[in-house]
Length: 518
Image (cartoon, rainbow, N blue to C red; front, side):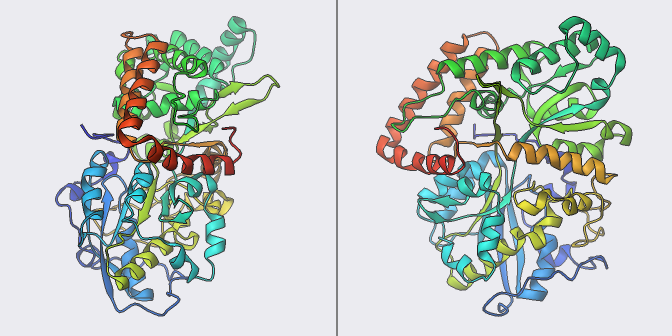
């Protein structure tokens, strides 16, 4: 089974037209695209217009459609467009992308892939180095400063060079239902029971206590404190890592000795298991789709999930239920000095890259397409669009101006297309959009990277599978993490400890650049 097989975060947004075929020619999609297209600035290549180059690209099937609606604009201003795309399930990323990178004639001119695999792909030597391409653009330094370090430091740079362009900045946040926290009767009962006010939890012990309270108070109504993602097991580890990383847990030390079975890691897994114990029936095997469905139906009071849970939930719920959503920083652990250490994992994300084997004129055009699509003059609108699939990754994506874009139609596209039939803005009010972005920004500022180097599928499987064994009671927390650590040691030895240490150094350099205590 491939890593993250069956990934379902955005599948409900895809229309039936997506599943009808893997290739979608831009000429057919954009016939009669409507009058809402914006005359977007900042599109002309530094060397002049390209000679009508048409590009084919690969993307994972949950990322949706921005390159397609941008294609006619880029064709008009830059002479580069999309001829077709091929989509693959995120669980098949390595199987679908790696053979093309290693081919003398890859089927794609550029590729979008989950950043989980960025280091492994860069390590092949088959991604085109991009520093020279950035240098051609006068505003490149400003752009590179604009990309948030929590993403750029890890998912675009490898061994001191840039091989990727950020396209999607995933982050976990704490979603909560305001109406339950604001309920006077629940507030009174909580205060009587715990001798403190009912508040959105800031620490994991508080989160456990609040989860238990809501479950015990509301489960007879079918409402529970929270649902935590456990399955698929080679993915659920990321939700445990929110708890573990904020408790000082790292993946390895500098010598590639696993650190996932330290006392702090065991304490984190004990906490994860306790939270799950107060979940709904089936909590021990809760998957991504179930957590989406529970949140959309109003069956959970809190959910640690990606930032976009609130966005696409608005489209599925009644307006009143959707407006009850709040966003906050993922809980952390209180330190000896009274501060709280928060860490929110930047799990998944998306990077754009170019195969080194492509012809030079195609590489030039592909870089222009990726750079302009990622650039704030374009991506400010993209990340605020329900049919894009990208979350904020640049500084302007979190401004008041950006919040306003979440309440308005996207002028880059129309609506006369089966792939994106609506265009009315995600949120109803600026205040709701601003709260949504505030929650995201608070977590990006404490973002913690996923592992993303060679061996990632095996590391994820070993860790997630053994965590699941602890959740169902087959192993203690210590036993489960000891088993995972032993498997990690064997994976590192099989791939070569010196090679793994060199690759892991990319993570350490980025982490230290952001001030992580590693």
